[in-house]
Amino acid sequence: MASDIETIVQILKEQYYDKTSALLDVSNSKDPFKVLISCILSLRTKDEVTAKATKRLFERATTPEEMVRLTKEELEAAIYPVGFYHRKAAHILELSRVLIERYDSRVPDELDELLKLKGVGRKTANIVITMGYNKPGVAVDTHVHRISNRLGLVATKTPNQTEFALRETLPRRYWISLNDLLVMYGQTICTPISPKCSICPITEYCKRVGVTRSR
Image 1 (cartoon, rainbow, N blue to C red):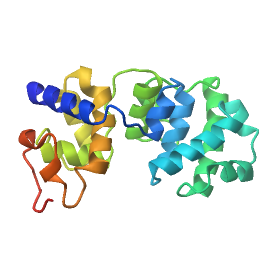
Image 2: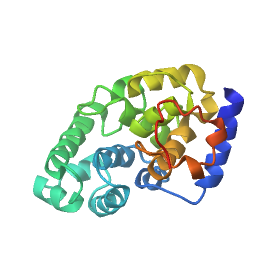
Image 3: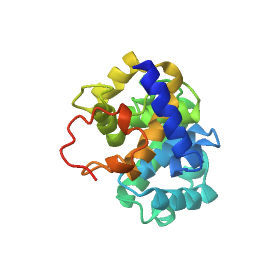
Image 4: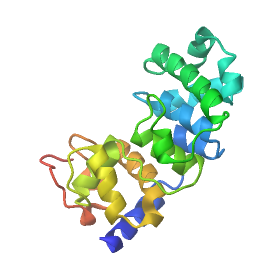
C-alpha cells in the first residue's frame, strides 16, 4: 500500500502543483486563527466565495480581540454570501470570545482541546493543527472519505472511521498533503457521481470500489 500511496501522491502533486484553494491560501500565513475562521466559512460554500469572504473579513479583523469589536451585522456584511452567513457570524463571535476568555486568545494546538470548542469537529480540528501548526493530522471530508474508499485504501462507512483507518495505515509523511490533493482531485475528476475515470491520472492504482458508472 505504501508504494501505491507514494505513487498516487506524487502523480497528484504533479497534476495540481499550480492549483490552490481558499484554505491553502490562508494556510500560507501559518495563522491558526485565520485557518480556524476559514474552515468555518468554507462549510457548504464554494472555494471562490470563501476566498473573497475571508479576504474581506481579514481586512477588518485578524485576531479574536479584533473580531469581537465587530458587530454581528458588520461581520455578516463582510462574509456574505457564504452559506448560512447569519449563523456563521454568530459562531465566529462566540468562538472569538471563548478563545479570549479561556485560551488567552490563542487557538489550541492539540486535537482534543480543539474539539472542546463548540462547532469544531474532527475535520476542522485536523485542518487547524496541520495548516495552522504544521503538526501531523488527517483531515477527512466527504471527498477524502469517498476517494479513500474508492481507491481501496480503506473500507469504512463514515469520515471519522476513515480518519482513524488512515492514521493506522497511511505513512505519516503523507498525512498533511493527502487531504489537499484528494479534495482538489475529488472536485475535478473523482466526483461523487459518474467520476471521470477516462482522464484519471491514477486509474491504474484505483480499485473503483462502488463505481457503477463513469465517464
